[in-house]
Length: 328
Image (cartoon, rainbow, N blue to C red; front, side, top):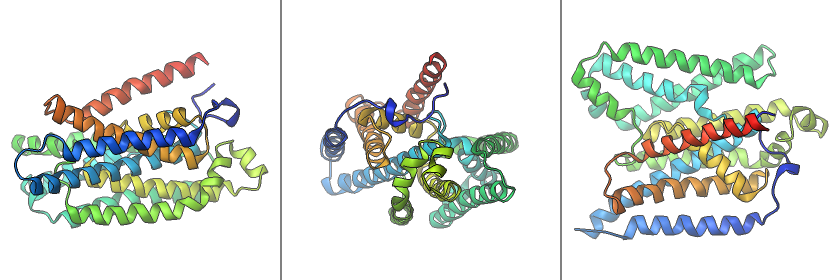
């Protein structure tokens, strides 16, 4: 059996509302601890910096979790995340081309709003062209879509590696810093724009959450129950493209966060229904990002990026899913 999204009969009986309350309390404690503990110097300055970082982590956590849950539903596979579609590789290629063509100084002098807009439009445009091309050709196999995304992602990654070998070594060092996700230098105006885009994507997708519950049963069952499977999947993939593009353009690529929080959220609430799994995955993402950053930066005084730890844990969890799936 493949590691597909759990069916209703495979879920464990528990109270999802109680689980969400516990996760909400833990997430709130993590946010409060990050904001108010171990403040040195000016409170106004600390609150300004920390609130911006917390808002960016909450926004990215929500967008990543929502996109991962929906993507795993439409692909019926728990080990796939939107990252396999090539968004991360396209983002890295865009950064590498900017440094190659204009130098590392361009990353600092370029208008952040223009840079953000170009990156979001490029990633969303790439996804829409890919979706439209495959669906217009009559392909109903989502795994063909995923496979094409993986191939294009490998192509983007190869081009990025090739171009990076041609740039100045000093510019290359600057480029490496940009390619790692960071919550420290997020612009306030970009947070506002990102929040509007995420809210719009959420409003667009909320009416189809119940339909996604049916889609999780499989294509044949969904069609038999009267769901327009192709239309729902297409709309879901558009939402995924917007959420992932905004998250990646805002802070950078986070490869395994979606895989980790989507599966943990589903296991904690013990149900496949999206009205429970999406909030659970979101709260797990907030705890992982805010709580993890608090532990690393405040308690352990560790200067390494949290994303390195998230990707390390997520990679181990990914391997465990593969091993568990192979044993079923």
